[in-house]
Image (cartoon, rainbow over the protein chains, first blue to last red):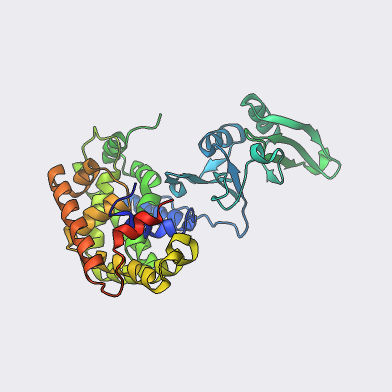
Length: 181
Length: 198
């Protein structure tokens, strides 16, 4: 669209910095403040720190990925941090004290691509969970592609590996009690 | 299917904590809106203010509405209006930033003499800060937030016809301010931009 508002549109701050999210922690903190104002000092105030390091995974269809990762792998979205934009959705998902960020793949999306684009995953996400057996069966029944079977490893983990809907590789494990090692 | 915002807000009259879902759905959008309009650090504080006002006024929200977003934009626009000095400061900072970045990124802009192009972006941002409040609100909700006329009307609580007339007055004023003020270049703003389309 070429019109007289184009210079103004192009001066919009996030057109200058495309796809640069605000710190998701700001939203978590402001939500906690709001909830404590609403429900009083006894309300549940959750202050979750964002880890110093967390990966960002790229998907062709990040909306489908969000659904899949929560359904099949039991990740929980930090819903207040979600960013919806015409060019794609950014979401932060957590499990335990770990966080992954997901967004749309593309050159203009920080040059990150889906395994569907590349032909292979180039990284794996390692996740420790409770009750690995239940986790495994849930992932399998929700359509995750299991690539290494659930098994006890000599170093004391029980683990399996699976590909998500676009082929990112996930490694899920539980630390075995000594007795099982 | 998620419950509509109207249903969530209606439920929050009984169970106040349910209002948190409204923050979940719209908090990041409103934070970005605020961060475009005032200093980023101040935007965080204003975000809390917007949602606390919304919570207090939630009984006035019509429960058959699907989305609370226009309503929240309206509250946020009022909050921004109360902080116009911060907004003006933000526009000046953005004028400097946008002039520099756009020159780096856009080959079409480099074709224009650098000083002229930089001055032009600064003029757009400078002019926006001097528009009458009502026109600036409509113009920015339309151009930056990409709300429809109907959504802007809902947000500001005015008829759609008023949105249209404010928008067209704002555009005319913006064009006059950005073109009229500059006598150092004979390239008018609009033709410059048409030439920059790829």
